[in-house]
Length: 603
Image (tube, rainbow, N blue to C red; front, side, top):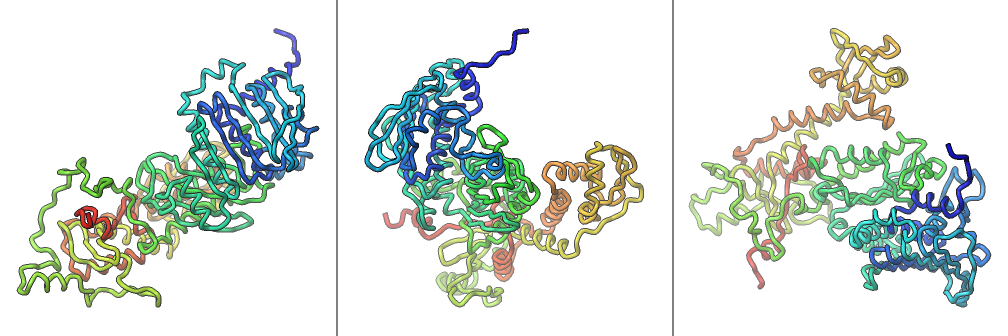
């Protein structure tokens, strides 16, 4: 075996670069974070060939002193950490003191900076060599410019793993997008191959913040976004979540920031999935931009070199506040607040011109024609005009909806005109036509009533006539003992009879017919992984959802106008009424403008 020896500085830096610099986007992330930490108010990002050939990032921050420039390219040199205690409460985006040294070791790097307004600055250069650098005078306004060229020119094995120019720029653009959400007070410009793509102005109020959100995430997200703000135990969660009708095929519009740092975290992902579990269609992903402000001492950001992962000291509290905040925000949405069904979810039947989509022509499902259309009997005497006026009239027997003093006109879902093929309710509101899937809507109403009833009586435990023996790990057995009170609240009674053996003595009465072993194993697994569990609640909800589905009004059942209006009013008063228990939409809207486009009116 070879003798132990010290690595030379160049090789050590290139090895370190493997942890920090994966692709041009990694370089952009580190340099932009440094600019934000330096108090920049404007950041300009210029990219050449996806960042492989060149990446220049310029800011107007505090700048770097002349004598500090050589140290800026040295490993483990930083202005952000001074004592061990500083690592206990990191308040900056960058802090490890490795980024610039790592980038410089695998590229041709020039760092130019000035701390004065007169345009006098200094530059330091490195071309993958040792970190000894010569400082030269250079004209530069207050701030810093880092010019990185020929990434991985001296490590061809790393360079061959880079993707195409388009792919690499896509990753880099996503990095800028995240950081533009981190620092809305900073203006950003982004150009690729000398073509400007972005010019984001700073956001200092709610209107300009919404404008930036629209530019970064798209106007459709902003239209479907619901604000979230909840504070508990020194933790503040705020931001926006999209309505379930604005779901995505991929998890490509999910931004979560902890103290301004974009992170991916299992605790966060699990809490978000649980909050959307009752309203999101299978296989779809929610969209959100959320910020968690927490005491820096309560979160460890030094878990991974790229700082994409964090570790919360109070994991259960963080999970709870995220779940409760999102769950409450989604439950509070009513038809009067909600946007209509997003076409990506519902399936657009109008093309860009407003005409019926050819792809859907001839594919409408066929329903048996009802023998009588409740409330729409055109065979009675009187003119068609009189008959139509009758159906537009507010039904005298329709349940009234409580309105505030400043609310005028029909309620959000309007008043029923009639049924279509015994499946859909047609209603008119102030904006146009409302279409309601009556079975899906009633299913949600029944489901929410069942949940409220169960919540009122609590979870009733049912003792098992014959206790079930369960083999578990010692860690799970220990957890069962220490979590006895929490398990009892869930209606589960466990007894430890050996180092790795439990007896299941009681389960929730509503789930007595479910697999007790699988339920207990899932509960213990959740408690180990996330510090809490909602397995019992989820299984109860699943059972009640099935009960609600069977109890809801079926297709082809004819409803009177009074019944239809009663259903509309119930929808307006019911939590999560925009989706059925399976996450499918319960209603959609066609405005008068939509109908005018369909029939080419005004052209």
